[in-house]
Image 1 (cartoon, rainbow, N blue to C red):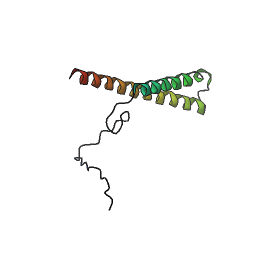
Image 2: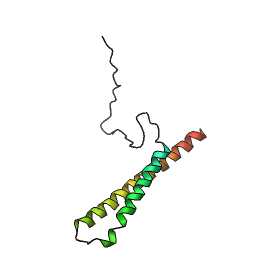
Image 3: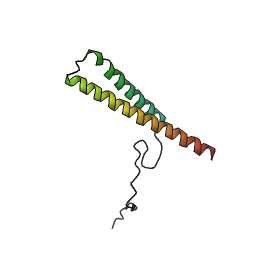
Image 4: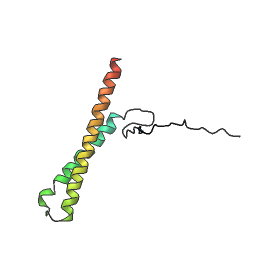
Length: 98
């Protein structure tokens, strides 16, 4: 018979929630700095491309609302990304000191 690998069972208390970090891998390895740079550049490009047609759009049109939503989502993405990059830099400096 084949032996199958079983995952260890993790039980959480009622008040606990699993901490999920979208910018790290399964083994808690931080993301590559090149990936962070590419993601930041992509977010900046989205913001710039959404800001270019903004003055030419009619305020009551659907394109205007979609453009505003794109700007808001892109800014939120950039803020989350910059927070995560700063957090990883801070933890790597703490690990180097120890």
